[in-house]
Image (cartoon, rainbow, N blue to C red; front, side, top):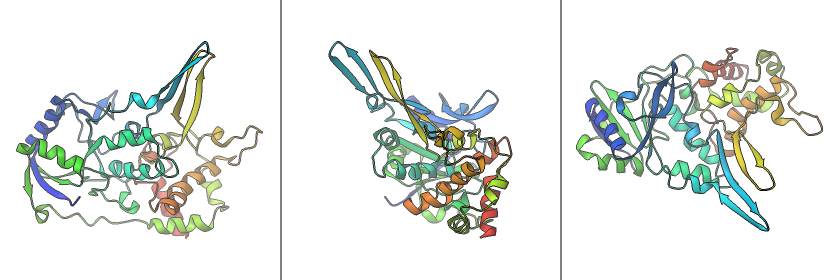
Length: 340
């Protein structure tokens, strides 16, 4: 669909969000909880924190839950009953909106969609993604951890958003990129005013501090480089980088139950855990934390891009903000680009 452009006042934006909540949309937005900001369900616009740059976690869990049941079984005599876990989500989030996220989080959805539809179409992911409407807000002041511009995005990118809002004084310009966004605007057309593209403020000239193609070039040729073992001696393998990342998608499958009943579940996992690649024999092909962090860099900046023509990173900087050892992936990627 060709992009369409609208204006909406700050006051009408509040009415818009409150209106869709009244109309039984489930609205997920940045909201304060226990002294921090997370994505969570809101009951009114006032519960939203739009002043925060990024919530502590991404909204990945609304596409790939931390834990989900794939199927359940029960056995009675010679009869076995299997319940598909997909039934629990089919249609359950047909009216779910993510509001107030940033372009980096929005850009993560289409990137994850590629891997979940590669050699196997993951119906659980796809069911959630197709019913999700993304209303993002462009960034005005990225912080020192941000590097979305280096990752084929920008603080004002509309990629992955159904509606991108750009603040301008006491109003917002709404850039509508898809049918889901347009349907919402049409349903509340009394709050929006259509406008022309040339009325929307042009994107700023966001500068890059490194070229990600050079980062990949170094990784292409230096798998055994001593940089990885020396730089990541401080990494404690806690996995916070992967859990807070909007595009990391490693998971584990577990069976729980007994002879009468049970279930198969999918849980988040992390390539930064020592046990992640541990073989039953006791051999581990990634024996040091340097090996494991190198794998993370390889996946982010080399392997994924070679397969899907996109980098597995949106430059949100969450992994760096939350790292207890202050490992800054932006600085690491910059170092590798310089060494290339």
